[in-house]
Image 1 (tube, rainbow, N blue to C red):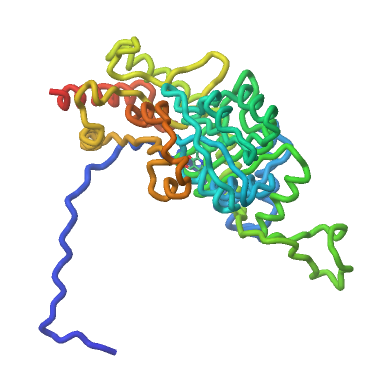
Image 2 (tube, rainbow, N blue to C red):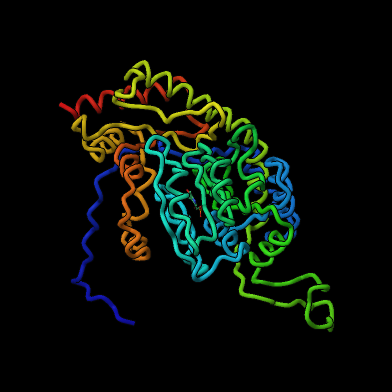
Length: 414
Ligand SMILES: Cc1ncc(COP(=O)(O)O)c(C=O)c1O
């Protein structure tokens, strides 16, 4: 053992300057005693993973969504990987999606060897611009992936039309949109070829980490269940050899450990029971934000702060509340605004840096990365997500956030 000479003293580490406490982050989980009791009870059960809680959570989700085939898994990213895999996407295939999304929508495509093509978005909603998607469809296109940004459903009927005409799959990345409806139908209900959900703590319900893939086709559902668990086939009728005994099973393909443990499923089931209440609160908060923003900034197209547009044929699940601010016209630096709000305990975030701005995705896309996407650039330049989660009070907290936003904008634009 090397001993330290007595004279050598380790200087005390410099303390980082205390960061202001973020009392109102942009998003967070909502956990109560029932959730805690559900997890404690799962911890006392015989099986912490691969037990009956997994199918029970899948059945509850299926009932909520009106879907038939739900596979829960370890994250939304895993769900995307499973979705792309069961659709048979692979090398040489192109997937068209939006640049205004989290990295995983695209990186899961690389996991199956597929290539990403980024369409443009509507500059006001940040959702896919259908005409731009249609223009990108080519001989190698195999799937269109619509992200319901911030919880606001994308133009599903129009995108379904484009996908059908092109003979390609439509996938819903519904990680932001559990509980959203489009023309009276639930998103991620199994209408599209595949849909995915995330149960990360900032999402509508949480399992700590977790996700789900919903497919229309029963065979793809079986496949997703098998890929989640190492590619192990448990159905004797599908084995290639006779079974020598009760231990027997066959690994029939490359799979992964994307299982969601029973402990997480118990939390998910408890959370799902409160989802209607969570959604109602998110919508109440959104309505309160809209009123407060109009009262403070006006409601014209030239208002300094504009709420996300709402469309009568779809109901957002309000994962986020992204407002549009004309930073350049106001002469306000977005970073400075975020810092000033953080100093007042208010957390904000930018969703998202367009994918083609990231060095990794840019490099993956080659020349296509440089395609003009004015809608995405305009959306990115203006967006800022304000706090949105059920624990906020629709009166007091919304007023505090909008007042702070107004004051900070005034101070910074001087
Ligand atoms: C649009 C979108 N897709 C996929 C994911 C990945 O989900 P997860 O974090 O559960 O892996 C996220 C996560 O934030 C997301 O926002």
